Each structure stands twice: as C-alpha cells, then as structure tokens.
Amino acid sequence: KMERRDSVISMADTDTASGEDSSGRDVASALVFLLGADAEWNNSPALENWKNKVDNYGLLQLDIAWCYLLLESLDGLTDAVRRLDIAEQVLRKQVHTNFVTLALAQAEMDNPIPPLSS
Image 1: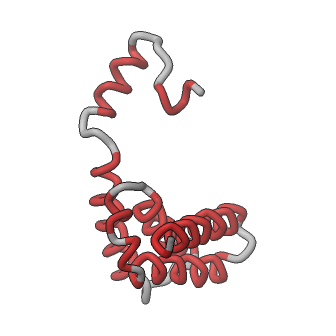
Image 2 (image 1 turned 135 degrees about the horizontal axis):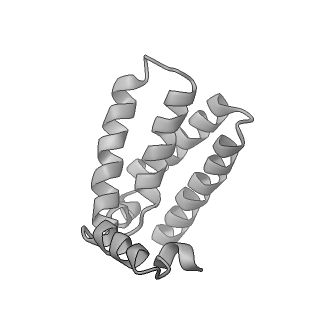
C-alpha cells in the first residue's frame, strides 16, 4: 500500500506542477514544486522500480530543466544538463527505437500516427 501511495503522490505532484509551469504563472514556484516531486521519487524505495516503468520520471526531469531555462538560471545549468541526460535515458526505455522511423513511414503513407490519431 505504501508503494501505491508514494507512486500516486509523486505522479500527481508532477502533473500538478507541470500544469503550473505551462501556464507561465509562476515558474519559480513550479520549480520548487517540481524539485519536491523529484525528492519524492528519489527518497522512496518503493518508487525506484517505477522510474523504469513509466515516463513520469523522465518528463519530470524535462519539466525541471525547462524551468531552469525559463528562469535563465546559469546556476542551474549543470543540474539542467544532468536532468536532460536522465530524461533521455528514461524516455529511451519507454519509446521503441524505431518509433520515429515507423511514424515517418506511416505519415508518408497518409496513415495516422498512433499518438496523434486519437
């Protein structure tokens, strides 16, 4: 039950902060919130296995890096680069390596690309 509770909390934190960030209301507050969600992911042993099973952790890293960019934070540059590397590793595990090739082939045949067709 603790694993489920931790995963729900961290995923909800990520979704909530991402919504704040995308609206542009308060990027600094969103960064604090996102960093808190990241701490939840990293401090919960129950969530360690989920990092490789869902894309939320990779998307969280992208959101944090994006906040650093929007804030034009040179102090956060090293952390942003580290988070982009983590995001790439996590998201590569979630997306088949041939997806882009397949999507391009489908587009050339005038077929809908699955994520966009719904």
